[in-house]
Amino acid sequence: MSRIVSSLPGRIHVRDRVLRNRARLDQLEVALRRIEAVTSVQTNPGAGSVVLFFDVARVDATEFEEVVDAAVDAALAAPSPKTSVR
Image (cartoon, rainbow, N blue to C red; front, side, top):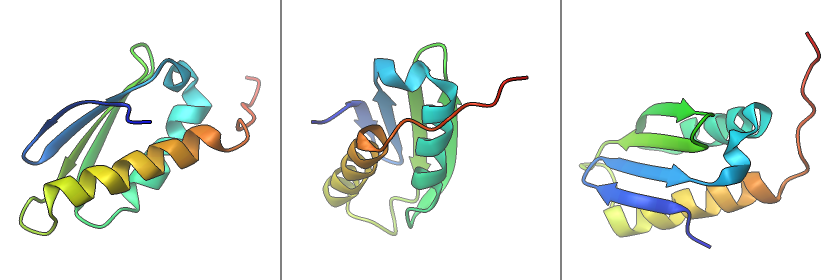
């Protein structure tokens, strides 16, 4: 299921209510930073969103969206990470 709400050359915006959970959002951020061509990741736990910047010269945009979708699906399907109590 695609959670991409917008896609422009070099920028993809992902949103899902589950990403309001900071631990889950952090887990996704780590996974996204590992994808080749990713240059920056900005998260917003209040909105449950991630803005991902990537090098358009290094990847095909359509294929890259599929990779991002798969990473988001995998992160959201994984067991919920435990959060530490402060």
